[in-house]
Length: 80
Image 1 (cartoon, helix red, strand yellow):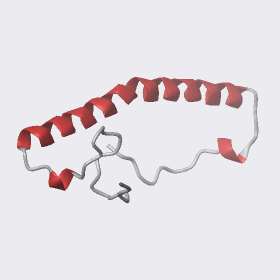
Image 2 (cartoon, rainbow, N blue to C red):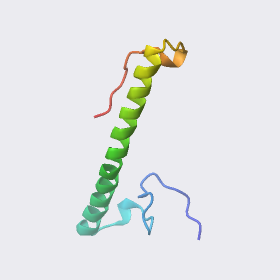
Image 3 (cartoon, one colour):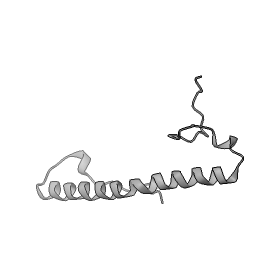
Image 4 (spheres, rainbow, N blue to C red):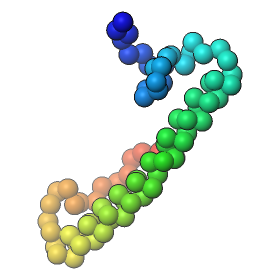
C-alpha cells in the first residue's frame, strides 16, 4: 500500500513509520540513537571532503585561477 511521505517520517528505516506513532520510549530512544549514529558516520567523509576542497582552493589561488566561484563571500549563516 502506498503511503505519501510525511514530515514526521524516519527516512531510511526498515519500517518507515512516523515517529509520532511510536509510544514506547525505548523504541523512540533506539530510533534517535540510530539516527545519531548515522550522522556521526558521515563526519569523517565530511572532514576529508573539506580537506580536499581546501587544498584545491589553495592550489587554484597559487595558479591565479580567476573565476567567480573562487571569490570569497561573507558567511551569512553557520550551523552548529
